[in-house]
Picture 1 (cartoon, rainbow, N blue to C red):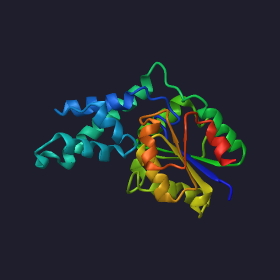
Picture 2 (cartoon, rainbow, N blue to C red; picture 1 turned 45 degrees about the horizontal axis):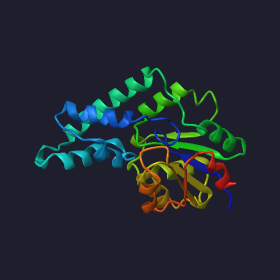
Picture 3 (cartoon, one colour; picture 1 turned 60 degrees about the vertical axis):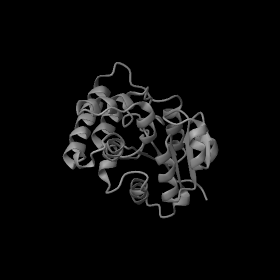
Length: 227
């Protein structure tokens, strides 16, 4: 059965991150008196960001009565504000090597391209606008984690893209991402291929225990796998 839709993650998969997301999480947490290093933050990359913040707070705050919806919301607002400012003003914001060419080649072959993310839609749109991916005609669908009732690893974003594409069988879908939750999202959706890339938060050794169908070092290999 041929693939009709490929769903790509953003930061670490198609967009060069350079640890900025981790640094921004750290800054947002520190504004409210919490500290977390990359060893805590990186494993949570890919989650909807309010969920990631909640998990980090439970790792850092022994008095759980302090972990309120207001606190989580305030840290998330700070994170979003810092991320948008960064992506709007960064001197250099780049796609990862071969990401644009891969999406263009798949779309030219008649395959729909979806982009989903643990970012809220406003951050995702800022990135898309800076990289001019709409003008370049690189994708069909963009869904942020705040547009569905449950973020990854729940398959809601993939399911919504399937509906938009008129696809009823997840065996016609491939998921591409760089984190544990990308892999589990693809598995929960029932995707035929779940392709993990080593260009983001997780190494090959860290990705292996989650059993993606493939692990690649170059996103260009996606075209070889699904053709």
